[in-house]
Image: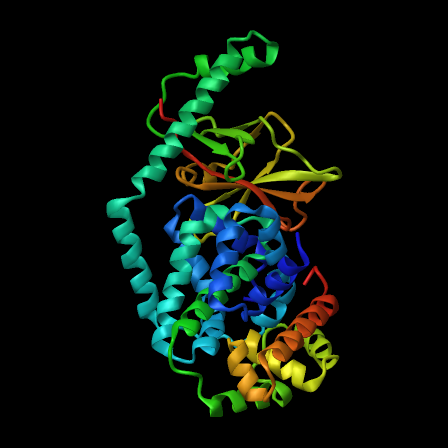
Length: 232
Length: 184
C-alpha cells in the first residue's frame, strides 16, 4: 500500500477525493481487499462524526418506493438467489452423505439420523447451511420441529479462545431468540419456538464463554444462514 | 437508535442477506431517520435526499451479504453507503451550494450544539477532539465531511488554493482519527 493510497483513502472517507479518482479508487477497492480495508478503516474512525448529525424522519413515501422496487425485483430476479441456496444445500448434503458413507463412527451416526428419521409431514424438518458469505459452510443446522430438536454439525466453524459461539433465530423484526451455544450435539427447542422457525434466519455470534449474559446477542455475528424446509 | 444495541442491527443485515424483507423494514425503521439526516445535510434538497435514501436501502438490501464486522458497526456501514452516494450526487450537480447556507453551517458547527445530537458522551468526545484542531482547519473539515463540500468550494470559501485545502483536510482527518481512536 503506497503513501498515495493512504492519502486517497483519507480523502475518499472525508468526501473530497475528486470524481475521477473517486471512481477509480472504488473500482480498485472491488478487487483489492487491502485497499478496501484501508478505506473502511478511515470510514470507521471518522464514523462518529458522521453519525452525530441530527436525525430527520423521512416521509413514508420513501419506504413505499423501496417496497415497490423490491416487488419488481421479486418479479424478475430473486428466484436466482433462492435456487442458488437450494443448490448449495443439495451440494452440502451430497458432501455430507459421501462423508457418511465413509463409515467413521461419526459419519455412521449422522447417516443413522438421516436414514432412520421417520417420513415427515411438510416442514417438520428444516435445514440451514450457515456460513460467512463466500466461505465454505461453517455449520449445518437441522431442526426437527416435531421432536423439537436442533442439531448442529460444525464443519469449519472456529470458536475464538475463551468464547462461545451462540446460535440465534430471527424472524422478521422480532428480537433474536437463542437456540443455545454450539457445544453439545443437540438441543431442545422451546415448544413455542418450533412453529416459527421455518424461513427464520439463523445467525451465530461470538459471546463470552457459556453464552450471552443478557439473552440478546452481544458480540459480532460471524455466520448466518436461512432455515428452509428440507428439500428432500 | 441509541436504545437499540448494534448486534441487533447486524442480525437484521444478516437476515436481509437471506432476503428477509421484514428485516429490511425493521432496519429501515430503526436507522432511516439518522441516515436521512446525514444525506439531507449533504444534499440540502429534500427530493434529492429522498431519492438517495431509497437507493441506500436498496443497495444495503443487495449488498447485505457483503457486510462484515470488519466494515464497522452496522450504522457505520449504512452511513458510509449513504455519504458516498450523497457525495456522488452532489458532485454531479451543477449548482454550487448556497453561500449563505455554507456560512450558516460553519457558524452552527463552530458554536451551536444543534447539529450534533445522539449520545452526549460521544458528542463530548467528538467536540473535544474537534477542539484540538486549528479553527479554520476544523470548519473546513466539517464542511467537507458533514456538508459534502468539494475542495474547490472550500478553496473559494476559505480563500486558499486547492492544495492548501487538501493539506488542511488531511491533517484534520488524521488528527481526528488519532483522537477518536480506532474503536469509535
